[in-house]
Length: 407
Image (cartoon, rainbow, N blue to C red; front, side, top):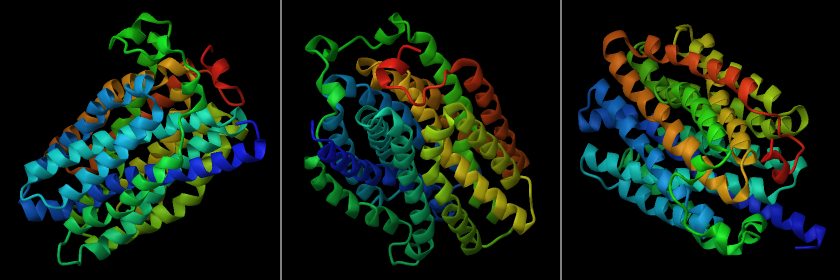
C-alpha cells in the first residue's frame, strides 16, 4: 500500500476491528469475576471451589500457547479468524451447561480462543503501525479490552434479573461476535508477515527459540509476566467476593463500585498508549506497576467505603494498563518470524503459571485467613516485576521493529 491516505484509513479500520475483537477478552474475564457469587449459589460451591474453578479456567490461557505459536506459520489473519469463531461458539454453549464441570471446561476453551485473539491482535498492531504510533495502537487495543470489562460490570447486575440469570451474560456476549466474524473479511495479512520467505514460515520445532540468541529474553519476560499475574489475576477477580462475604456489602452495591471504578479509570487507560510513545516504555511502566500494587493492597486491606472505592479505581486501572506495557516489550523485542512464538512461550506457557496458580493459592488461603490478607499479599508481585523491567528490558519507544529486535 503506497498511498499514505489509504494506508492511514486502513490502519484506522484495522485498529477499530482489533479493538472490538479484544473487547471480549475483558468482557469475559469480568463476567466470571462478577458471576462468582451467583455460580457459587447455583452450583452449591465452597470458597476453595471458586479458586479451583478460576484456576482451571485459566489453564486455557496456557493451552493457548499451542494456538498462538501457529501465527508464525499459518499467518496472523487465519489465526485471528479461528479465534473469533471459536470464542463465539464456546461462549454461547457456556450459557447452556447443567453443572460446574461443563461450565469450567467450556470456559477453559473460551480462554484458549480469547487469549489467542488477544495475542494476535497485539501482534497485528505492532507489525502494522509505524514506530511513533505503535505504543498508541497497542495501548488502544488493550483499552478496548478494559472497555469490555466496564460494560460487562455495568450490564451484569441487569442481566442477572433476566429469566435465565447468569446464563444471559454468555448469550448476550455472543451476538456482537457473530457480526465481527462477518466483518473480518476486509482485514488482510500483516505486511511484515507477508514478506517472510517460505523457509521462515515453515513449521519449526517447539524448542526452536531456545536455540536462538533470544532464549534469555524469553525467560526474562516469562518471569516478569508471572510475577505481574500473581497480582492482576486476583486483584479484581475476588474483589466482589471479599466485599460481599467479609465486609457484608450487597452485591448491587459492590457491582456499582466496580462499574463506577471501571468508568473512572477508562480515560487514563485509553491514554496510556500515548504515554508509552511520549515518555517511553519503562517510565510509563513504573507508573503503571506502582499503581497496580497500591490499588490491590488498598482493595484488600481497607474497610471504609471511600478508601475501598479509590483502591478499586487504582486496581482496575492497573490491571488494565499492565497489559499494554508488557505487550509492547513482548512484541518489540523479537523478530517477525519468532514474534508469536516468543509471545506464546513467555506469556502463555511460562508466564501464565502465575496466572493459573495465583487464584488457586489465594482461594485455598482464603479458606483459612479470608480474601483480604490472601489477595493483599500478591501486591508484591508487580513491585518485583518492575525492578526486573528496569534491570533487563531496554527502552524501545520510537524505534522500528527491525531495530528493537536487535537491542
